[in-house]
Amino acid sequence: MTTDFATLSPPLDRRALASAAHRADELLAGLPVPSARTPAQREAASSALDGVRAMRTEYLAACAEEIYDELTAGRTRYLRVDELVRAAAAAFPGLVPTDEQMAAERARQQAEKEGREIDQGIFLRGILRAPKAGPHLLDAMLRPTPRALELLPGFAETGVVRMEAVRLERRDGVAHLTLCRDDCLNAEDAQQVEDMETAVDLALLDPSVRTGLVRGGVMSHPRYAGRRVFCAGINLKKLSSGDIPLVDFLLRREMGYLRKIFLGLLTDGSWHARLTGKPWVAAVDSFAIGGGTQLLLVFDHVLAASDSYLSLPAAKEGIIPGAANFRLSRIAGPRVARQVILGGRRIRADEPDARLLVDEVVPPEEMDAAIDAALARLDGEAVLANRRMVNLAEEPPGEFGRYLAEFAVAQALRVYGADVLGKVGKFAAGTA
Image 1 (cartoon, rainbow, N blue to C red):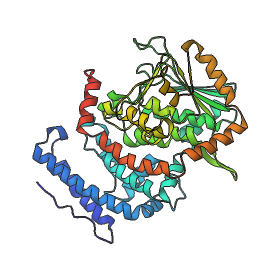
Image 2: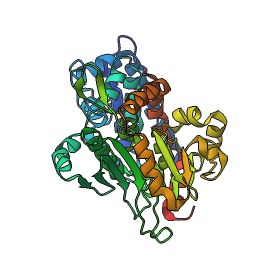
Image 3: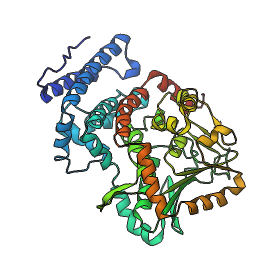
Image 4: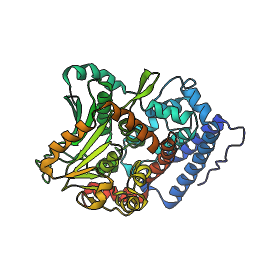
């Protein structure tokens, strides 16, 4: 079974793209679920998808600025990444999957999906590559979330917000963000991203907060009962079940709370400052695996208990460790970065190379005192100005956007790779 999906010829026509996407959807609708397809059916599906994806790529290369201007009323509206893909689906049929198609995808295990998130990645790559649209979208993701704005009055009054994955408490000018998913050793999923972004927003919005601290809470898990754990990385069971979305987890995480910790929050501000940033400290107990280590790369000061370790098991899991590929070489050097990312090297806190990733290594019983001292050192107006200039030098405007544009597609392809599906299935079943 073959279908002719000819490439668009100038001038590019959104109606031709919609027609080609419709033909591809009809072909897929007539096939069994991916795991039940014959080799010939898999080839037909792949050929159809490759053809229409090439058209989307060409269309976006030529028209990304115009598309984004139409969706954002000439860049006068700030749409978050999830709002942008939904708006594009409504305004440009065939450019990205519809809400109905994505709802059908979410109801399936990862191995049974058609991979429509790849099409969202293609769209976002095109937008992020565009000189005007890309920076505007990144700015949109630095604005406070509606949930944080709703919770702000209560937090300002009580100094406490308890969420499913994060507990936020303000004490003596410090926002304490405690990761509290003790059922899964603080493994990351969409709920954790939602709660972390809310907590980071609140800490940055509250004028009585001067510094922020992120630390793992005390676990009830049998292997770590009574001990603090920082983060076990991506929740592989959720990935296997199809509950780690590209837009609402993999991209929102990088564009949202991680970047807000690094750069600050974009508000109306004043003439001299577009961003409201504050110093951040991270404290690692037991381990920082995968996303936990990625998180450390955006902090101003990192402490680690001497019996803890750090790792980025990307090679084992088969996916890309977020923006670690962008930041780790700068922080630890290219050789260590390759050993950790490509070779899966685990770095113990008590070995010399750990000092490339953390600022202080202290005995577990001295962590509390060391954290207090680190927070006190970062509590100053000059620190705010200097961290902003250091971060500007480390990640010049535009470089992060160029990386993220390629990441949007590369990561989408990886989470649907046959090797990844096989590995996460074994992890989820406990047989890896």
